[in-house]
Image 1 (tube, helix red, strand yellow):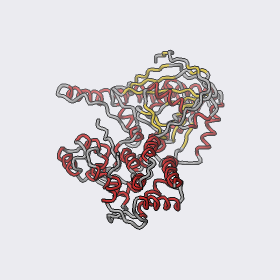
Image 2 (image 1 turned 180 degrees about the vertical axis):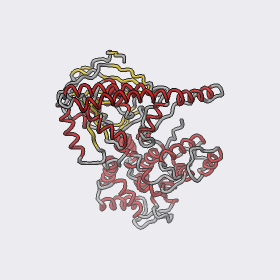
Image 3 (image 1 turned 30 degrees about the vertical axis):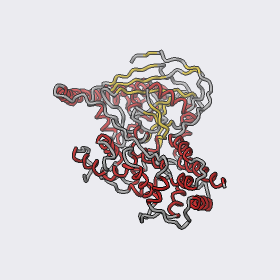
Image 4 (image 1 turned 90 degrees about the vertical axis):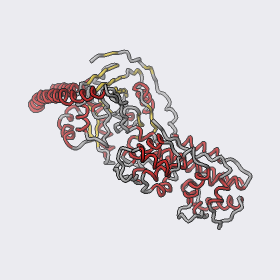
Length: 175
Length: 376
């Protein structure tokens, strides 16, 4: 599916569904396609950063820049795969993996103190000093049995977040 | 034009401003602060800090569907020509609209323009000395050409409520769907409207004909423009002889299913605000002008090749409402026209949202973090 035509064939829908491991129903994929075309104003087959930022609700989100790095130049199939972490049909493991990938900005499979500090900075902005941020993070890490130099891997995240009632679901409106 | 003066008189004195509509964002913020329970167990606190799922869910929710983009989507009507009996009927309808109605309407419009120009130009040039008479005639002629325009779309407009009158210190506000709102209202009474200056033939008409009814132009892209325009507005409402001023406080065309936030400019002129609600009936034509997708010429052509443009114009009689508040007036218009309210500023179509929304969320999260720090 190179360029976005306004027609989605049954074959395309099934292909996308396979790719996202059945995280979405076929009607949801059609809805997502309409949304994709709506956001992809210039019809290039990819949603550009600026086009995402035209959604004010997204632009005001503190994590929008980190998400944009992951959303950059996604075609429709990858767009659906990206959103599949937010489907109620996927296991908790996949959602935790998504969160891990967001933290792991250099994609080396390890989340460092620095990565966690970056995310904390995005979430708190200028309302707390850098020193206080480091203090809190060090303290919380030590309480949890890690140190400032620990590098967390995915299994650590699963251990920490796995037992929580993590709610990360989005409803795709189906006409 | 039928007048039904049954709009209820609303006795309203100054009313406290309702609490600002908190965006869905801040309510989600509250739910995320519930997440941050006090936890004695070390892992628990770490979990709370690492768990960014509420913020991520909001972002993903915005990607999948958001209330702002919905305001500017042309919602197509339901398909009715889907079977073998109705489809040929629809095709026949298309032929009738394009080959019979369209030429007839273009003819009506041409006749209208000829009558208008042959009266307007002499009046404009010859009556230079007699300003009051000239203005009166020009007003009538502009009303006339608007009637011709509305006839060219087979427009059926139902007017409810009292007809606007020429009085100083009075401003009319209406919801905005398309530039034809102006034409529909102008047919009722000559208004002086404040509009964005457009390029092309529309701009030409703006600077020649509409100038005579006292219209004011602004340019969205110029920052200094706001003060100049504000001053022009104030001068206009003071003048006893000027046409009633019409403002579209949304600042942009919305699809007639929603209203975006009203700009405060119209409500700070120190005069009475009279709302007008405009609701188009989509059965025959969708009057929403999606300025990103179509030029105004294409929009007019689309209307001229539809069956009819049907709308309701509701004017309110308001006693004692001296200083209308933008949120209160917006509520009135939205309820009356059956529109849903959306807490966004229409100008976000052209610019990024202000950082204060993001800062609100950041502040609430930061407060939680600081409390955590102080706990020990």
